[in-house]
Image 1 (tube, helix red, strand yellow):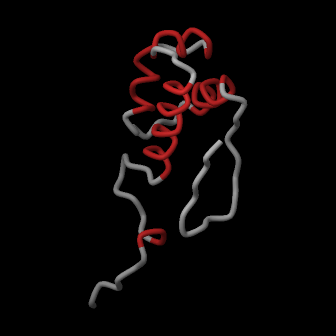
Image 2: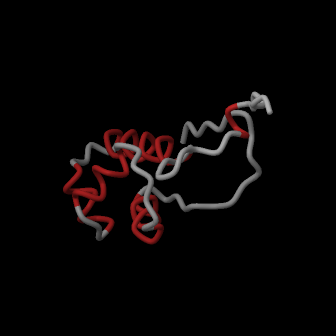
Length: 92
């Protein structure tokens, strides 16, 4: 049976990978830099380890949602379920 060509948003990521992890990591890195924080400073503010901050910024998929929520809370953000769109941007 021929393989159906699906748009990127409909393809499942390979095991251990995530579509949103790189976007979240880029957002965390951007906000950290905007606020002139080092990774260790952000980690201390969020109550997480420096290694975790680095992993998130690198786009590593993680199941530690509570730690991810703590990082986002430093910048006044939270995780939410939203309808999927072609492209999601956040200039905040």
